[in-house]
Image (tube, rainbow, N blue to C red; front, side, top):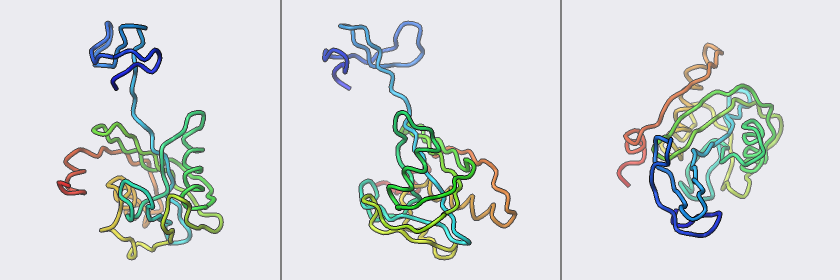
Length: 185
């Protein structure tokens, strides 16, 4: 950030009085610009023994498979965001279940919140998807998943499914995890 979104003057990066971390500060109007993590909300849509995945039509990771998920919008709940993203990316309606994975990515300021969901009808590719398909566990394109958060969610799901017990799974993706997943590219 170079300029204040309130008055247009240059900002500086410093620790405000009474705070404990650096923020963008505008000395002209006194605004402190707080930048907080972005929430990615989505679903793990299931139909029988199969999971619905979307092949991304957009960057990043165009052409790789993901669960329907995306950034939460203002004035919506995490559940509403998850259902909206599922409709947008997969033209699918779901019956939303419990929050299943909560994954922190502090190095890129994101939090993933994936809800279990039951597919309640048909599906087709939305504008952000090249294709949408149902996969049994042995059909999952593990080497072509878009993000480590998606792989982690799917692995939890397949480990929990035999017991039919799906507790909330919390974890963190580190820069090292990300590098192992994507390589040094």
